[in-house]
Image (cartoon, rainbow, N blue to C red; front, top):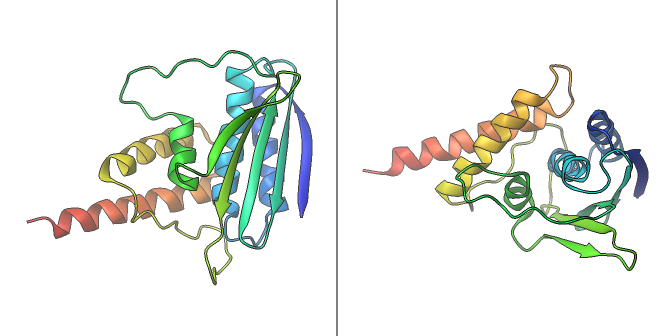
Amino acid sequence: MQYQRTFHGRADQISRVRRDIAAHLAGCPAADDAVLIASELAANAVVHSASAGEFFTVRCETYPDYVWIEVEDLGGPWQLRQPDDRPHGLDLITALAGPDNWGTDTTSDGDRIVWARLDLPQNAVPGPGRPPDVTGLTSGELERARRELAASLALARPDSPARMPILAHLAAIDAELAGRDARQP
């Protein structure tokens, strides 16, 4: 299944991206993660690229073993990451997709494509709010992802479909951190 849509380069379009991807991937076991990733990539296009005030394109495609999400913006200079302890949107994408499952490409006309690949779990049970497997993340990665998710939750409208997957991710992170604390002497 393929999805592609071009959006105006405005912040109010990010909620439309979330709704569209959620509807496109309804029933897919990676839908919650894909919605969060598409939202982050769309926000980056609006805030950190020449697409601000112009346009950006979101694509999503499902395959038997994975979901592919990409956002194409009008490019522009990358802002170097500040040496702070604050998590950033790409940290969330790394936590959800894995460090080797996302990247950037530049088109011949200077546009930038940021993509992510979400592997589908074997014998996955579809359903909204399914908690992710966070057991492979370090404690530092869990804490960073938790702060980023809490910030996203604070920005989400009360009726936003993104709240449920954010809450599921937060609960999974909290349970993993609590389990690790309980196992330590």
